Amino acid sequence: MSDKNNKKNTIIRKMGPLLGLLLLGIALTILSDRFFTVDNLLNVARQISINAIISVGMTLVILTGGIDLSVGSIVALTGSITAGLLVGGQAIFPAIFMGMLVGALLGLFNGLLITRAEIPPFIATLGTMTVARGLTLVYTEGRPITGMEEVFRFLGGGYLAGIPVPVIVMVLIFALTYIMLKKTRLGRYIYAIGGNEEAARLSGINTKKILLCVYVLGGLLAGVSGIIMASRLNSAQPTAGISFELDAIAAVVLGGTSLSGGVGTIGGTLIGAFIIGVLDNGLNLLNVSSFYQQIAKGLVILLAVFLDKKRR
Image 1: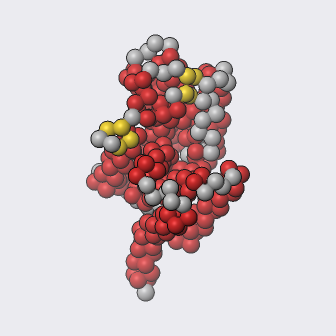
Image 2: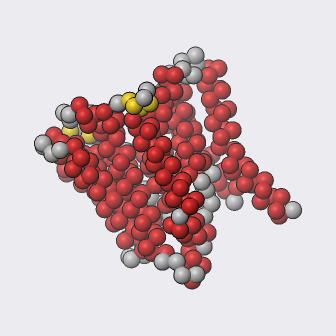
Image 3: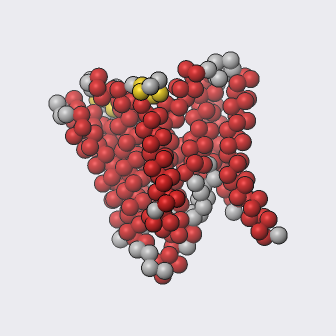
């Protein structure tokens, strides 16, 4: 009986998110004749790419049993630094590298607080969230940074073979992360730590080193999203990224990853990100007030946590 229940839970975890996405898509196709069009679907994919890339890093963090509340602020800071360097005359690749480096360093800071100072992930990343937001406001003096070159704007607004560039970046990141989780020792260790960190440590896994890697990757991917967002808007906003951490957590949990760690897939996260993005797009097409959209998104987050509790 236990094996049957486990198989049933596995099937629900894998197929439930996909079924939910399909039902949502069918409902929006019926309610709006503008939803199921090539232009709109490409637009949805471009919009989703930013949250989806952040959600990849959040998946790795949550698989270890942690959480990262700082990703939204990292988005704002990395986008602002990259844009500021470009406007100041820096070449595009060094500017992008510096933005990504800042994201990785903030992730490293989170990891050190959690593994060395032994601060709980919720508190550690909450502190980093506040610090990074403050640094963004100091760096930008509270004003948007605009006027980047056309070549930079291609990263967020261009197309390759008819596919938006951010979507291509998103697919590459998901593919590489899938391979890492399925085929490498690091991936196996991430699942092991999420299943039982103490048991993983006693079996010889350097848990602190793995956790450092995970939070660095989370910060790095948030930085990539921040750079893409600044490119797409041709503007780095000091208030960018607010509540992005909630969207990422919702996408991860809706995709079947357990908040307690050790269980989940990167493919499920992609489906979860599409659920969040399609919901946003559908509500906009239906001219639903932004106030009510906030309520809907909050209910989706509560639903995600409830489903995670039921699965466990």
